[in-house]
Amino acid sequence: MRYFETRKARIEIIPMIDIMLFLLVFFAMMTLRMIPTTGQVSKLPTSSTASVMPAPKLLIEIRAGGHVFVDGQATDDASLTALVRGRDAAKLAVTIAGGEDASLQQVMHVIDAVRKGGATQIGLAARQSSE
Image 1 (cartoon, rainbow, N blue to C red):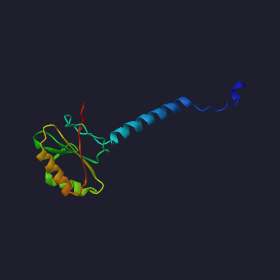
Image 2 (image 1 turned 180 degrees about the horizontal axis):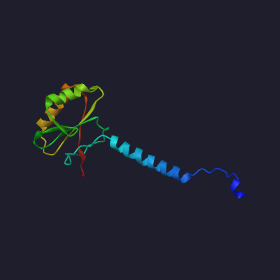
Image 3 (image 1 turned 90 degrees about the vertical axis):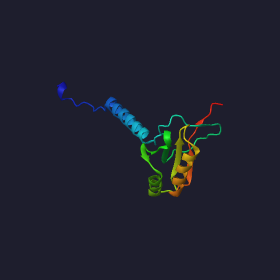
Image 4 (image 1 turned 90 degrees about the horizontal axis):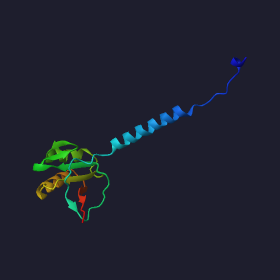
């Protein structure tokens, strides 16, 4: 008559741990995907007074030849101004990343286009110098 005995219910912990670990990894990977891109400019100018800035809401890259890229797409001054106007310009944090070969005039063109759009929080990306 052992077959008719009622057995006490058990909660299996191992499958629950597996599911929780899967959820932890899933949310960690999704959180990392939501972090804004840092851009593709690898040769940023250096500065001995560079400081950490908050993550930009809009990253503008000035690549070789003066080509301007926003989120990986080429753009010009007029469309850059329209893009900044389309967002909440008062709260928009813009970071401009130019390579070592970007001229000051190219940087000023981008700054002018961003300011025409209404943004006031503009930062320039730089690497900390090793000195």
